[in-house]
Amino acid sequence: MKKICIGDVYQIQCYKHNGKIHRSWNEAVVLDIKKDYIVFGNNKTKVTESQGTCWKTKEPAVMYFFKEQWFNIIAQLKKDGIYYYCNIATPFIIEEDTIKYIDYDLDLRIFPSGEFKILDKLEYLYHKRIMNYSDDLDKVINNGLDELIKYYKNKAIMFDNARNRYYCQEYFKLKEEEKNSNFL
Image (cartoon, rainbow, N blue to C red; front, top):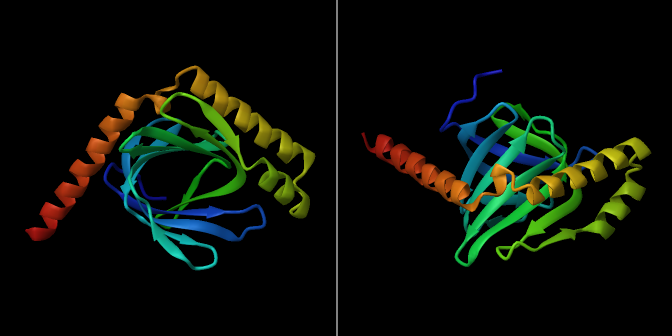
């Protein structure tokens, strides 16, 4: 596997438990590399849904993909504040310039006010039944959700708004450098 470097550009592919692709993003730029996770950024990136429809994200995002945690965290830098969209998902892998993970439906949405809400419980129960999630997998998924909420309540660095604004600036600097180097 090639060494991951700041500024590298990857795609993201999100799968479901049955192995089918659910959604993909065409850009994730490496902003920071930590022992336990990698930080990526993107802005107005193309998203392709499993049925082929495409759309673009509306704002810059800072994404945290973990090597061992069963969740990922996306800070969405909107005009009215930073929202966090957290997916309960497998730890990521990288294959052929693509970040890959399996999404397990449950999401945690955190609002600028600090309030949070667990989303998609019914979707999780439906997929658990039709895709036959084992009891062990169910435990791991629910532990991932509990761990994620603990991260948030304990003010983990991923939820630091100033830190995410900094990463967003770094993303735009890297994009500007890339644009300028293409003109040379």
